[in-house]
Length: 381
Image (cartoon, rainbow, N blue to C red; front, side):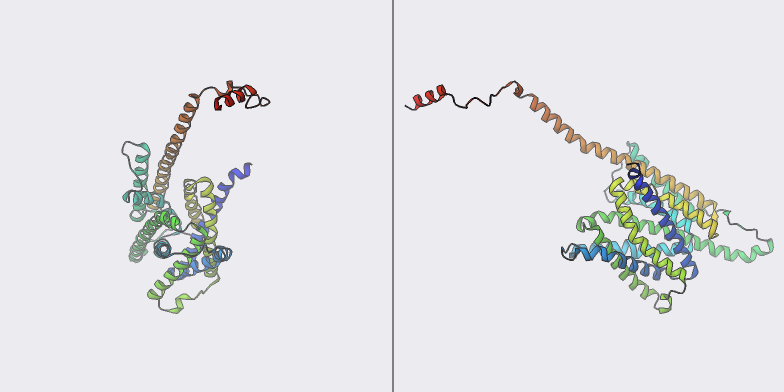
């Protein structure tokens, strides 16, 4: 019983290690020279090949994996925003920035989702409500942290090295170029978080039209692979960019594709038992894991502005989640109130009836006695 209670926690911790490994493997492959666009195509293709036998083969007789035109276009839109655009700019940002920053910007998704839902009228903000104020403040903290990561790079904290004075002028131009690349990378990662937030909002309509989530995931991977392939052929017509030149690139491609297929089951299972807030609470753990491993083993540089911005994003994330948790609690209370009122009204109505327990029925006595039969006959005569 104890293990069953904590099983979702163990699964979410394992998933955060898996996500951290995806970020680190992807970063290593991109630094080695692999094209981010080609990487996305290979990743989605492998994910589709792994999940399609489970999604389509058992459902061929029932036909539940077939799609209508509306579902087809919705899946194409979801694949375009959530995978094709999202992952292409994410991996480009990952290449220009760092693994730790890429992981930290993922914590912006709940805040951006709340902001988009508010603009679309799906979220209500009440100024006199503490939970609404918490969501607004948390969103502001997340956005401010993201801006700090992009603009306030600051001095190095980890993996810094002493540079002689006579080399500073030589490295000045190079440092300026690196700073521009860093800012570009952070901006791309923030844009990726916006795409992912829009994709989450789109899931409301998409899930209503495609209730089979397993088939839906397979179709998303297939459409994303096709779209990403078209984009890659357009921007990189050179076929040499499609070559996998090292075992590290092959392992990274296969592992990230495998994680895309496996993480769906883990996330869906945890959300079905503990809800989406429980799943989102573990996101900062991935940031911590990536930062420690990248700094210790990959010699990634850590800056003051990045650290302050990451902490602001994580703190803002928990503030937004706290506000959402209060919303969920109040929604449950509002759903229970009509039921309680109906039960109370039914109880009062029953109490208005006579006390049926005072009536006694003798099952051995006939329903009609001889006297009552005689009276009925006399009346008819």
